[in-house]
Amino acid sequence: TPPLHWAVWQGRLAVCRWLVDEAGASLHGTNEQGGTTLMSAVHHKNEKEAARLADSLPDLIDFANERGDTAISIAASRGVLPLVKLLRAKGATLGPRGRSAISPLLRAARFKRVPVVEYLLAEQSSLVDVASKNGNTALHEAAAAGSVQTLELLLTHHATLEKKNSRGHTAFLEAASGGRLDAMKALAARGAN
Image (cartoon, rainbow, N blue to C red; front, side, top):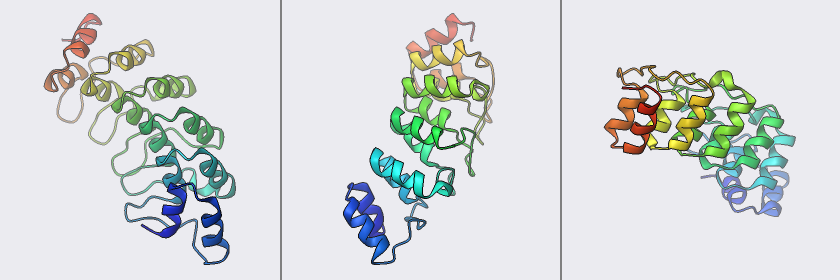
């Protein structure tokens, strides 16, 4: 990991400034996972540095590494709603990116980040049934995670109950294969089988 990324992670703003201004470190450089300094700040929930980087380097806001990680998808998966809102206000897009095509909504659903799911649906409810490369929708991810709250929220926003992923699984089958009984009951109550 480059020194600049370590400094960002730890919130060492004076070190960051010195590395960039005096040592010639590039704010556009990536770490071994293809993450940018903005992604590092978001991953470590450093709101102040993330805001500064988003302001000074707007091209990093929607940068996606090979897997499709973006700063907003990382914030969504970590459940940091203030960072999700900040990045959205700075122009971050909510659609899927990269080879896996996982959107911030799918990330938030996978990790049971109910407030983030609620916000993202309010921002762009048309993404409720957008699928990843493997065909999973946010409903599949919430069912696999066993998040009844997320399932209910997605269904309230008209998620398609019987949509199948690339393995032919519905959200109900994803819940069943993971032994998520409460999720299975919630989906069955809405008509899944």
